Amino acid sequence: MERKQCYFCDEKMDKIDYKDAYLIRRFMNSQGKIYPPKRHGICTKHQRTLSQAIKRARVMALAPFVVK
Image (cartoon, rainbow, N blue to C red; front, side, top):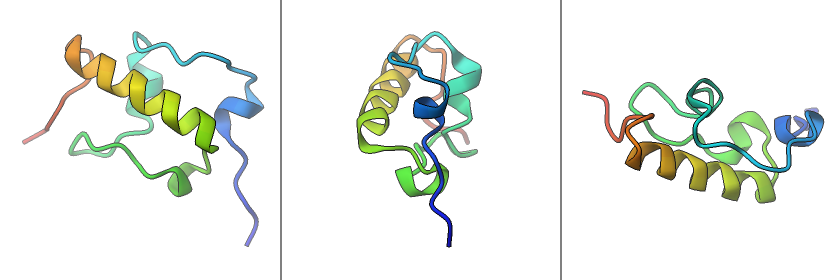
C-alpha cells in the first residue's frame, strides 16, 4: 500500500490558519471530531498544528465542538 503524502508538506504551508474554516473542516468528520493522522496521511508536525488550529477555531465559533 502506498503511503499518503502530507497535504501541508506538499503545499509548503508552514502555519495552519485557524480562521480558514474550509480547510479545517476537511480534517474533521461529520460529528466534529478530528480525523486521525493516518486517515489523510498528515505528518506528526502538521497534525499537532492542525489540532491546535481546530481547537482555536472551536473556541472562536468557526468550527463546531459537537454536531447533533
